[in-house]
Image (cartoon, rainbow, N blue to C red; front, side, top):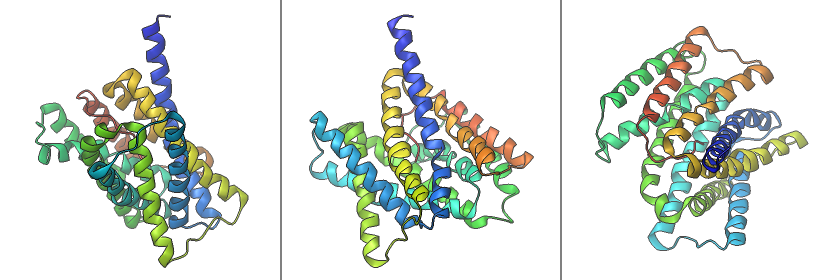
Length: 295
């Protein structure tokens, strides 16, 4: 195998590892909730663990930290954008199935495309318009059967996708200036700051079982640190187009594991809707944009 082929294979495996790590996060979230933890505790511990690990890696590698307005901008991205997205996503898990939550979040590439066209003045090509229409159809099919049972969960899930889309649009201007590792470390620190401040006003409900603590640790280490580092390492070897295509493995992992381990079932129309949403993302992937990992 040539050096180039080996590098591309390694990149593909890293992106798939990242997608799988992100994909199991809803299941760990459900385990943490079952142990008595609330959303505030799960996210406080997640961001603290991730920020500490990434800061340690920064120090060991001797990486330079962002300064001045760039530092404040990245902190704001974490404290407002990522914290808001994470709160919406984990709140959705309380009211809707892990499968539905994952599929709703994965409308974010389409929303990013729309924001980029309006805010960043990027042209809307026929391919992008087709993807937007497909995503709307897929969304209608996905949420149709669930409206009577989990409207709050759907609202939180779509809110997570919208907030994450704005976060990415802002990130495309800030993260290249600081680098992937430094940006991730500061963003995670910003998220930790938000939930640490919230804990001053309302004490978080911590996990009451060993399994709950393991689930929270997995969310911080596996689904945050490992997933992000694997994504950026794979992105460097493949490029945005192939990374975006392989990242659609994430909701597939969530849906399959939720069915196997949690006994969740999607209706026929939700299966169709999920497939159409992923199809829209794949269509968008043919027009590469700056790669950014999901929650």
